[in-house]
Picture (cartoon, rainbow, N blue to C red):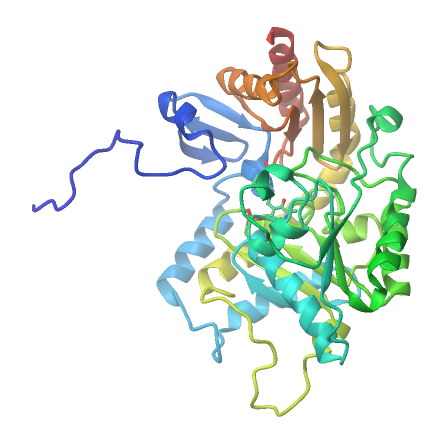
Length: 442
Ligand code: PXG
């Protein structure tokens, strides 16, 4: 057999890994080779309990049979169909299934391949929506400090995580930011929504006064900010944002890439907080993380604004080669079936108290300065080592992996978001081992 490539299975050099300390990793790699339900198997044969649902995406756990089978079947039946000017039934079926569980008032689905693409799509739609209605001066986009909206240029421009922005030049123009809602002096050790901070939404009035409402297209926020380290919306905050955006004709976009598909105990955060945005961006849990797919969900009002002009004309000059890909669509339907058949969103709601109590039992351990939880999400914030931010939490991550649990860290915050199939005894194991890790830290 002619080999045109040198076999080099142990050479880790070629793969430039995303959001990874490449040099550290390649000196001491952490490799998963298999996964089932709540556990990964490492290359050296150990079991690791998944405390993060992969990257907030495997909400039904790993290698679930229905999803695996749907992908296998679809790959053998219709592997690809052109996404532009052609269709295939399964993408339509999935869209209807998403709308079935979406908040009342959300009626349309535009497919993407990731959360980042959902964000770009929603931002472009917002600007184009106003233009289609004759308000073409509404081009400004408002994000929030500490927001994470993926890694493309629109997303990092409205996003508010400095490390993701500062290396990449001038970004989009015409962007402004609301203040973040992290108020540790007032809200430390809160279970669920914090009491203080709704007034921070009033800052939108200042931004409107500064720029003029007639120049602002949309406000985008994560209803619960995940990547920055789990910041819950203060009580009344999202309601205020909705009222102010509505008053000024500004679209409100909820970035539900993390909160979508059951993480808070409802299908979407919009339902959990009972606030209806004009658009929602999703990805991750849509296909249980198994196949890349995202979707922007919109109201009829947003969609219908485009449905003008001659019928043979394309209404929105936007889309991706893989929008509504058949295999991803099949994975999406099987995922939604699994969520429904196993009652996983309700399960997340039922486990919230147990999960929260377990997490808050870590209060008082070394270096812990805050704990917060909601649905099946939790964060433990650590006091940074003086002069060496992120190091303490990263040490915790490495020690946790050695102990057999997978956690995520961002800055000096430990974030957890287990698959919604987690059992009470697995919660005890996860939190117990994390406690041991915290006790062992320098
Ligand atoms: N919006 C939000 C709110 C997200 O959390 C994205 C957009 C981008 O999605 P894609 O599919 O392009 O990665 C995200 C992604 C973490 C972590 O540990 C969070 C994300 C991705 C990877 C890790 O906090 N969020």
